[in-house]
Length: 215
Image 1 (tube, one colour):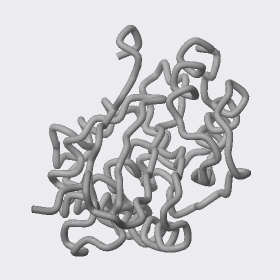
Image 2: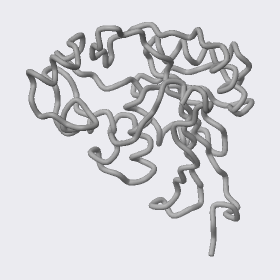
Image 3: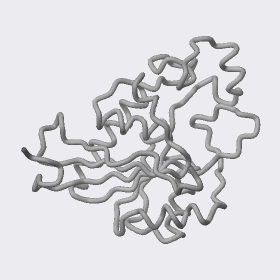
Image 4: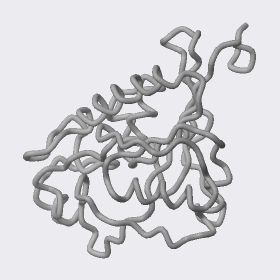
């Protein structure tokens, strides 16, 4: 039986990194609001940078917190091609909910959901649903995967985007996808085997990897 270890084909490895912590003392939903992040934990950044592959393709979302996290990882020893910004990797746009506190959203907008702000199929007013995020992120993943077969790809993005990547790899629906955790500056490694059956070409190596003290 063929296994991931003995398939002789190009393997493309996606190293997903969630952006650093966004200071948010009031607990507000920020979605695509372009907020800054805290990159002062040098021990954490050195640890994560040392785990990333050398000479990788780098891609970030178009938001400052992802771009700054990528720049900080590279400043702490990670390297590769100059990062390319991909707006389809942006976090979900929560429309009129952006800027509201999570408590206010829960109290006044109904549709409570254990792992998300609401059912992943629902669109906040003037925003997009998690399903919309999954569709745009998946299209970008497939295009980049085709363009860089056999390479390591470091993608510095957002919790929602990483959940979308896991859903694509595992063939999951939106409600299952939002159950994954993605901590700030954590690593998730997903592999794609070029010559495998397309239905079984993706493999999850690990998710949400952090140093023990940071987890």
